[in-house]
Image 1 (cartoon, rainbow, N blue to C red):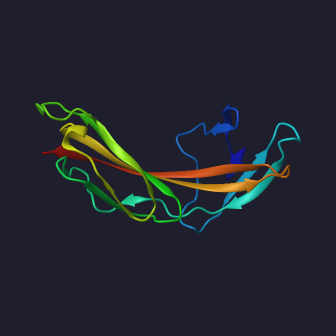
Image 2 (image 1 turned 180 degrees about the vertical axis):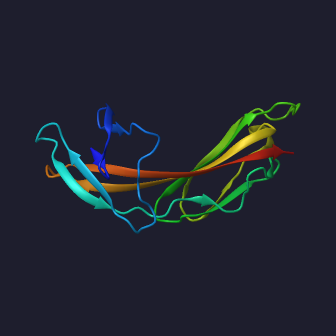
Image 3 (image 1 turned 135 degrees about the vertical axis):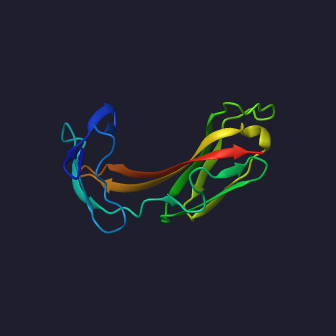
Length: 168
């Protein structure tokens, strides 16, 4: 398996990984990505295809260092809308000096249609006070039919992440 002439390594049956941190995947509906799929034997089949992915996502209503109250819902808006799904998580990773006696959880979130806006409903006890990352990840699958008739999924994942303060 290679994408844009970058070979991937098999790490489990049907699963591949890049050696580096990220692949040069083109997004934005403009430049096609060349995907070369070849099996170890002819029963798997092969395909050479050109896949175009939508725009990358970017959080638009939250800025780095912003205070977010755990006492109300958390709404995230973003650019990079397309016909797929997103995951939004708010994960607390540093509670130093907060003396929090209410918060028990460290993460809230969920999966949503990629409409450009989603609201995470939670209760205050689900989030501790402190520093947290708001992470928005878009999953855009494309399906390729191999010469054997089998279908495989080639998914593009893009993310945006901001560090915020969870406050009362």
